[in-house]
Length: 616
Ligand SMILES: O=P(O)(O)OC[C@H]1O[C@H](O)[C@H](O)[C@@H](O)[C@@H]1O
Image 1 (cartoon, helix red, strand yellow):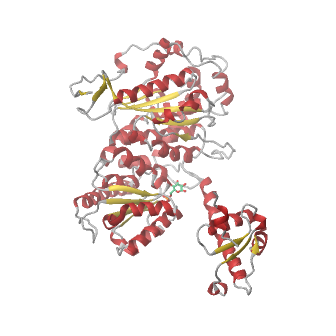
Image 2 (image 1 turned 90 degrees about the vertical axis):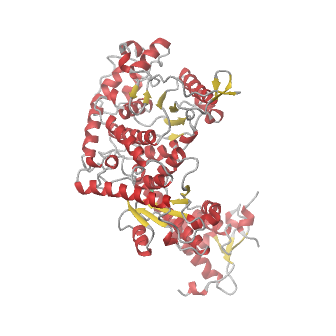
Image 3 (image 1 turned 120 degrees about the vertical axis):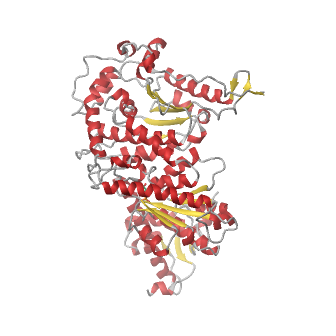
């Protein structure tokens, strides 16, 4: 006789740079622009593109248009670069789409679709029910310019919340709002509990913008992994007494977040601390979380609005409160986002960076997600941008049906970490292996704050290497017909991060219109949640059946088939096996005879009989 868990486990010199002359990059107005016909000539298939793109799936057309090789002539490529370079002067942001091979004909064919997408976006911003399945408005753009909100009450809610966030963060940082029993006499740590859209934005922004010595350091519990939760709590140690726990959940009922909260509350109890004096909730009014926080009298509650989706909530209290508590200038984030919003409202494709991105995605992915989007920021602090975009893009675009109910199985896969690190990991495959992706390089021009740089070899700094790696990889990929987009910002600042978030939010919205899908719901996520609930319900039945057999005299060990039968779930025998395997690995008083490598040989019973449960 052996516990199943046992059977299953086998195995230079400093050189200040502040006196450099700053040369503005590529001012479009100061350059004479060549015509586009030359630069795209190899791609053009004039006359062959005839179908009505606004009504048909254009993959066939795209295939024809893409038959030509990418432009390789350096002069023509330079003209293409200059011709298509987008610059946002005030933000210091550039978008280079020259290494995506779309033709002028393709752009012309897409124009009506873009005009329709711009119109849909305008309607959305005016308060249309842009998320028809859920009957919801989509209002994340109002968060950075409350005057755009379609109703005065919404404007008031946005402004009030922003003021409340700033006031609360100031109060915490200044020590006016403090924990009851911390030796420091102020909050020193934030423990953010949330998942998906209630974690990814705050995580990305913390990594990108938190100062080296923030007033409060942040940690995240973004899963229902007991090991991960224990690790975060253990790392806090005695500082739990000075930890502000920010529980974030739009719905207020997400199981992983609820579990995280219960685990943290248990840690507080065990440390003799009063959780309510250190807990903050960000959630929709009257959600389970909101009611819990209100009844238990938590330190503060901030609203999440019905018309803001989780994955576009970075500029709501969800993203702003954690950022403000770390000393990040959230008003600057909002300014950056708002400036980008203004730019991406343009109905002129070439002047609209979000539309240009959507155009590139459509071209590169044949409008059906045939290629993956690899995000490569060459800046450590932007490491989490790809993870953030993964949800934004994939949860928004990954849809089974279009708005007319046709099965389309849309989406674009997103992955990536950072350069040049990834050059030593998977760029080999990108350069030479399966050609199933396009790259987005994120370039940050400023390497270090002024006056801190030095040349580690004559004429070359550490940052020059990073720059060289980016440019080299971009060229090497293109030489092998791998397309790329490059987004360039001057520095990673609250303003540029706000702008990047807004750029991608809009690009996703426009692209969704191009492929005629609802970007603002996530029906597929429910299937997994429902199935998880069913597994847990089955586990309870398995336990009841085993308990009954284990209360017999003598104890009656059961085969998996017998357990499944008594659970009235013969079709779930595999899941029952997995449940037993998991419980046995976790000291759940479950004993198995036989070899778990041959499930049919197993006989299972509980180490103790629970009579209370038996007669309950
Ligand atoms: O904020 P919450 O309601 O807890 O939701 C957290 C996340 O849960 C989900 O499963 C959704 O697919 C995400 O879009 C959401 O961001």
